[in-house]
Image (cartoon, rainbow, N blue to C red):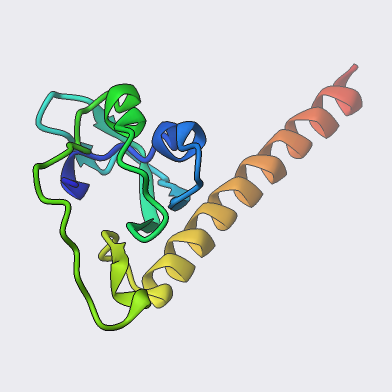
Length: 127
C-alpha cells in the first residue's frame, strides 16, 4: 500500500467481499497534493486500515484502484503472536489532526451556508 498515492476514493473497501478494508475520509478545504500519476488529492485519509486476518487475497482491491496504490505481493506468510498485529494501519493522521481537519471543513461549510442564506435574503429583500 502506497498511502501517498491514495486518493481515498473508497473503491477498494466497497469491492472487498470480506470487508477487511476500513477507510474514513475527511474532505479537504483545498487541493492537498498530487499522486505519482498526477491525480489531485482532495480527501484526507483519517483512517485506512487493512485487516489481513480477514483478507482472502482475491486481489479485487488492486483491480479497482485508480491510482494503483494497492498491489499484491508474493508474501503471504504473516505469522504473528497477536491477531491485532494483522491489522495494518496506513494512515499517518492522528485523531487530533483528523478532528482539526474536520473542524476546518465544518467551518468552511458553515461559512458557505451563511453566505448562501445572506444572498437569498438580499435577493428576497430587493425583489
